[in-house]
Amino acid sequence: MSVNAEDVLKPGGRLVTQVPGPKSLELDARRKSAVPRGVGVLLPAYAEVGHDGLIEDVDGNLLIDFASGVAVTAVGSRAPRVVARVRDQLERFTHTAFFVTPYESYVQVAEELAELTPGDHEKRTALFNSGAEAVENAIKIARVATGRRSVIAFDHAFHGRTNLTMALTAKTTPYKTGGPFAGDIFRAQMAYPYRWATGADQCADEAFSAFVSLVSKQVGVDNAAAVILEPIQGEGGFIVPAPGFVKRVAAWCRENGVVFIADEIQSGMCRTGDWFASEFEDTVPDLVTIGKGLAGGLPLSAVTGRAELMDAVAPGGLGGTYGGNPIACEAALGALETMREDDLCSRARAVEKIMRDRFREFEAAYDQVGEVRGRGAMMALELVKDRDTKTPDAELTAKIQRHCLDAGVVVLTAGTFDNVLRFLPPLVISDDHLAEGLDIVAEAFAKHA
Image (cartoon, rainbow, N blue to C red; front, side, top):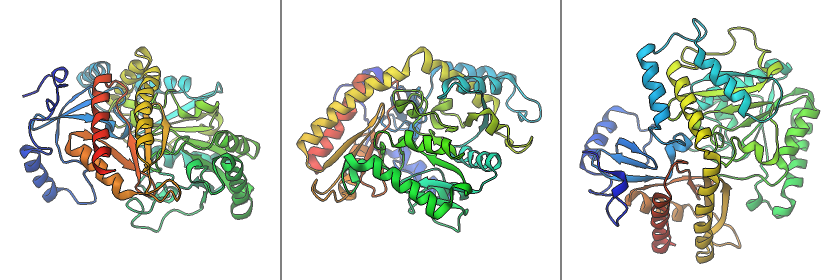
């Protein structure tokens, strides 16, 4: 029986069983006999009902959601505008394949993304299902449009689990088991201020010089089709590049006829306090890959970019059977309306202030907090054994996460060294639930740090 999410803020009121509870454990036993172990599960508390910022499990526990399904449910897991549009579309038709008999909602989503993505140039949008599909197609578009083959990605990057996107992804375990991978992929150093050898002040200049040198010596500018970069890296540990680095890379691409792809799959859709993280330094990508928060929980992704690049691919070269499914398109229109009408960019900035203020307290109290970083409702703590050596502390990170999960607060980790706690609450989470969740994180530090 569903409990009232607004009446559970008293201490202990959210949880009625141990997490996971008996019903979840029963379901998890079934999972283990039916689903391969490669499909991992962080917290086997099986979801029953979504509330704004909370997940109610099958045992009646209310979990504070600091994950948003990995930045997907920015508008909540059952946003009224999303639900209404999806319900109406289900009554009309579920599928035709846009490339067979098209429908208006696909065109509407494309029009909306042309307006929202950075730059006032003419744009086109193609819709897909997953972030990895969007990245694969962005690379295809860049290669066709330029007639070149090579792609430059960055250290700490994550772009997906398909063959090409695994090649673009930096971290081996668990993402890159099972090569060989697609070729003509090169990797440049990311401007990672906290871990830059000569210090944060030198990071942007030196990283940019290293990038230019790599392209010149190992790739050849005339072979470079695209540079793909996350304006704020996701799985890599919410790394915010040194100021100016992203904009300089984009300008270099423009000067050399190389397509600059901003992978905004995790950082887009109001998550960082702007519609897209690229906007923070007024960077205008040639192509933007979009996903996760786009459709309020339904599978939809997009590539939006310069018309002359997008139109380079011949008819039939882009798409897929389910790409831009009408139900997902209607969900996206509902999510976009929610973001706009409820000003979720401003809400993301408000969430940032609440989280950053608490994290600064942790930083002052615990030497293991090496850095507080992020933007909007995309915040992280990098944990280290000591601040002088900056040795990553994956063990402490795992203990704090485990404490939070046991207390019914869903917290994710990230980072090349598995030492980053990352926080991605729904943008619609209440201040009370946000504060209660942060109190649990504080308890975890008090016990384990």
